[in-house]
Length: 339
Image (cartoon, rainbow, N blue to C red; front, side):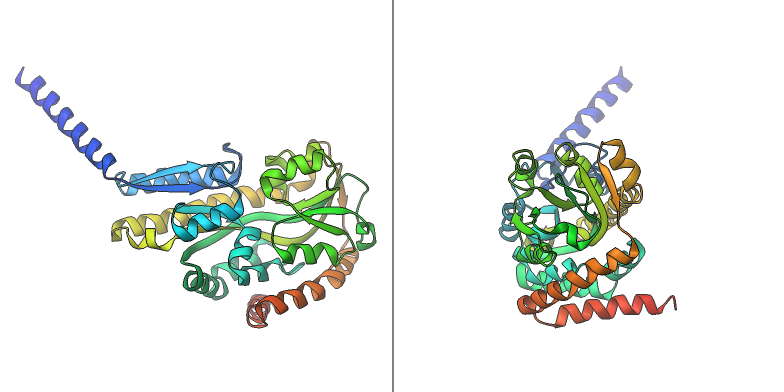
């Protein structure tokens, strides 16, 4: 009986401790826009972060994941990160660029050769300097970036294999001016549409097409409203792991370490799923009923010649030459390693 009594008392004590810990836990609301499905890179990474942080901190941080734009669109999430109503988010380039303009330098088209180059540049000094500047100017801490996919053009009008084929198409773009400039440089018309509204805009014919990576095309079922996808790979797109810095500074040293480590784990998971989908774009999108249009190196060079100078000029007019020059230098430094 004494043994049983001791077990009951121990269980009761542990329950009280757990309840007290839960009551005093710091709430970390984590927003992202992809579906609540483990095939979604953002959601798989978010759940890994939740499990990792809560485990490493013995639940002193309560991670609450809000997928599928439940806390609002990109603009609302960036505002929430600034004022602290949203503690953390994995969010795409367009809304970030609207809040922190230098991030738009990453919309430079046809810049990175592959994932290895892109990851090296963003994990290195260039990405670190960008994060430091963002923190200083916005109060938002960027831990790192993962893939939002290599962006390709889709449309419901005709196959696009050359810049000339883009002429006259109405294309949806993210809600930042640099994306408008990219599409207009290819003689198509650009319409900014927030992510949650994109499927409806395609279904209703408000726009003929859009540009996204394989993950987002599949995740949002955009293939249901788009017949053609052109594998031009115009921009290597990013999801940034962001946190309100005041919240981060309010964590204990143990909690900060847990967050830092768990973001690294999440980032690898996120990158792995997305890059695998990009590598298998033809098979994945063909199975979804899309006509996959290859773009030859010669035609890609024509896309680059049409788009890159115009977009660079626009970016420089918006943020100056410093960040574009730093990005060029980082790319050239990477290439020099393999000469």
